[in-house]
Length: 66
Image 1 (cartoon, rainbow, N blue to C red):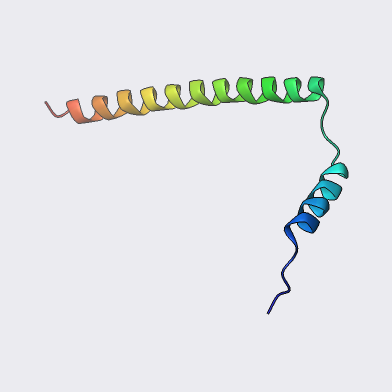
Image 2 (cartoon, rainbow, N blue to C red; image 1 turned 180 degrees about the vertical axis):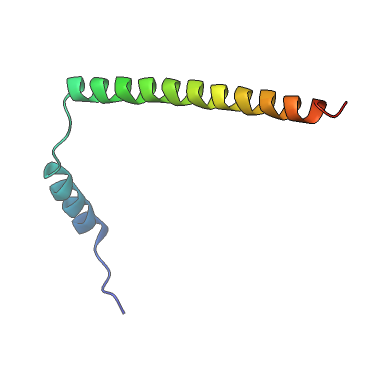
């Protein structure tokens, strides 16, 4: 059975561990956020174009027999 940690000791350990984290600067965070947003826009445009192309091809193929 695992030993139980005192909640106060646990919070001290959490605080100790978070002080070891290298947090990004505001500039790094803004640049990373902008890069993610740009990639999301590119991915959305790509999938929209692919969806439109597949839709057009399917309607072309299915309407050929009429």
